[in-house]
Image (cartoon, rainbow, N blue to C red; front, side, top):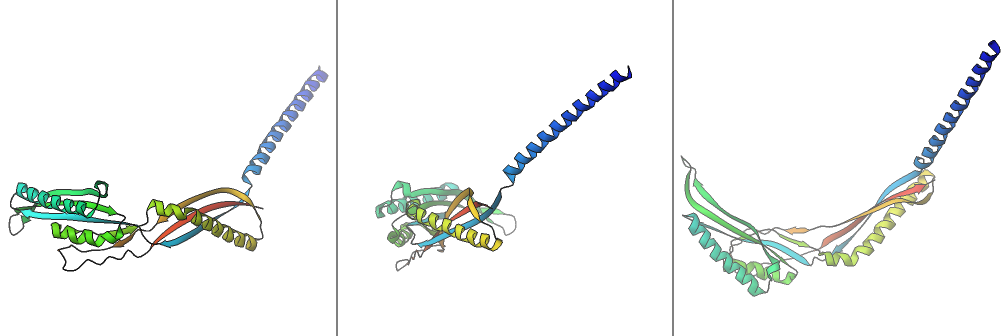
Length: 243
């Protein structure tokens, strides 16, 4: 009886030992696999490139503000003046898609001496003008004010998507070269070697150059306009595999 019990106990211990060994082997294998996936050494570096370009697009706001004793009169007079301005813009050669209404309002004007009292109504109407004819910007400003515009907003110059496309590949290659140069220098200092690329991403941008212009009231000479230069840039983020 004791021999049978001892045999059963021995068999159970052997089975238990085998089960523990198998479980340990499975855990170890999973650990090794995980280590192989996550143990890859990497080095993340950013690179950039930029180029100065002459803007080919100008944008500016042109508006009319008119005050009158009643809301209807201010709105009617404002509409007449803005129609004259838009008509003049089209006479210059601007197309409908280059003139976009950006702001319209009618607001009461108060006298705050004592009890606030409405003394007039102010009607505003502003259009955003965009053109690629930079030589025409001065004419647009001067003839708009002559037609009745009394609000000229800030002028911005930018590089169009089409022009940026012409240098995109050049900037991308330069940004990649910049990133690799930095990575090689850092790897050399760290005593490691770059063996591949894990991930890479790119982003681009163009700086819009603003040119402030105060409220216009008509000028005896042509308004001077200088577009200057705009910076177009490209940046990349590269994660290199090292050993």
